[in-house]
Image 1 (tube, helix red, strand yellow):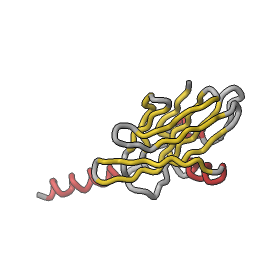
Image 2: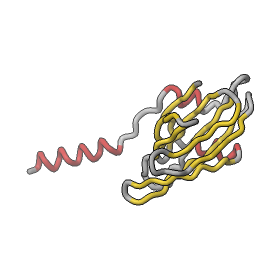
Image 3: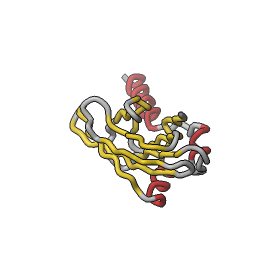
Length: 142
């Protein structure tokens, strides 16, 4: 019985261990623009529910966000849409320009397995703070 309890405690403790950041995290947190592309940071606050929310860019899935994470997206300038997938009808359209950086806060709401998203364009200072407090989950380059 003691071995079972000890194993359970070690497994739970292992869940609390934070993985080291990916190498792309440090690079993305430099907030460097790209002269011929637009950069979008899609970020989730660290103090929100733990829902996993799948996201599409221009009707192509790019990954999922979790609380305290962000995705850096490097794309040709122009009109783009970020939206939730499946039953998630949240969306935002952005008209982007080359050499500019945009910050979008992604908030996931829900009940059990149903997730609903909101996407809000936020100012640079707040957007940077979301990214600095989070970890990258994907770097999308097109």
